[in-house]
Image (cartoon, rainbow, N blue to C red; front, side):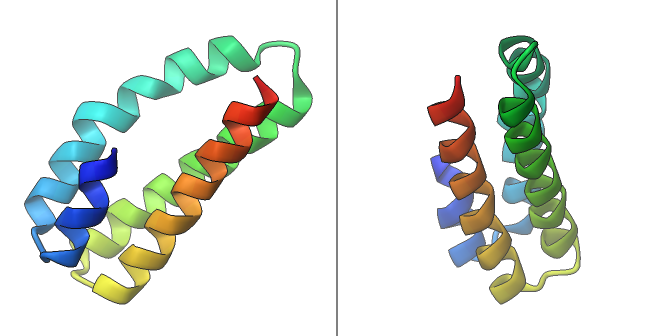
Length: 85
């Protein structure tokens, strides 16, 4: 996922979406499994998914600033989730 930020900076929109599909979407199942029985972790995972969808949306719209902000929020949500697992 660390490549996603550099793709946003370079305005490589297809690469952003490909990276999200390749890396992040496969994480959903694993994150949900690990968060089982942990309400705070489930909430953090949901926040991560929402931010990931925003990154994807803003990349499709080619809105670099918004995509960058959403990416930072997505990574912060992932860090919060990781601390809860």
